[in-house]
Image (cartoon, rainbow, N blue to C red; front, side, top):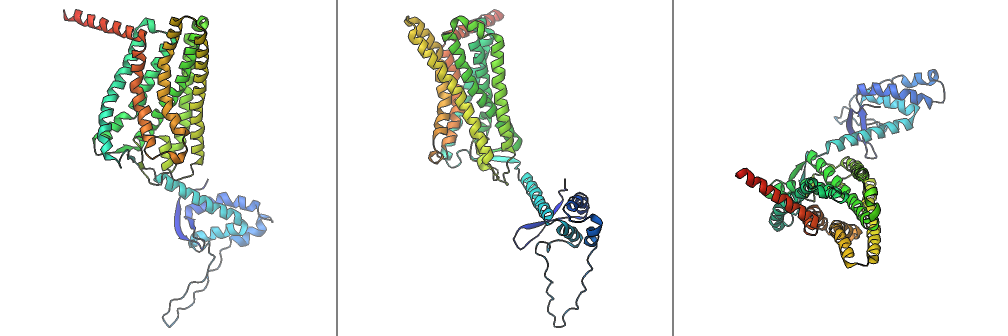
Length: 431
């Protein structure tokens, strides 16, 4: 409503700066403020406005002292002493008609000036400290990432191709497995290349835009994977506990609906929280004590009021951890109860074999998160969140393809079939 061209003047007696408006801003302010001030005036406008608007006669200047001493300035009102001659008249009008309105106007100018300072405090880039205090860990970490990242990419892409190209694997279980592999590829790619670049060079920076993109992608993929693990446990529950109704209930329409709900929920929750986090003022601080941009790290680095952001992060994290975990516990509790009723050992082994891979993946993904969030904040060391992030952000996506391929005969059979087909086609082309 009011212009933001504010000039900073000396402080009042209380020590707070008095923002002063220039001439054009004073005219616009008078048009907006005088009608409001007149509402608080006890008498009609013509009777009271006239004297208040008359400029005060300029005080006569006293002749300088002959002794050479400097004349002391006459005392003025402490809150108006910093105003210029052009703007003091407007403040006197406001003070005469509505002191409350004048105070609110000064506070509003303080807020606008603070917002301008906050906007200017956004850094052009961030410095990712990582293990800056432990440089001897950087070379082993660089070698580890250089080995695990290609393995994670290759393993998850192979699972996607095998599940899509083999008709026998066109089932709900492998439909969700394709989603899991895609999430792992995106999850890892959002952080590991930047980490490899920073560890392999002396540059440890990431642009503000790159940090924002990394923040969105990393957390959207992580939140969606939490929900996906719960949906996959429900699929195993339907396959073992309701085998006669499995194909009828878990049809293509329901699978697409569950996947859409899963993706939309992850995107909405993360986008809302990440957007609020990026709006926090940083006050010129551009050092992040982590390997990549994370919501909790940015909240900790910010200098503004962050209680609402911390509460939102706690609520969203609790939902993303508790809801899928409750669904997983319910599903596998029912599966265990059903397996105990199976009399044949072959049937029980087959049922447990289909669930063991998923249970291992759930343990690897939820284990570090549960350990980290259940500890009291005072017992969490400075580097513990970094090691946890490396585990569930790098190691878990690397191990998932091997867990599903080594313990799943259908995947191994389909992979062998595709390799033989590729070898035969290559041999035929060579001849």
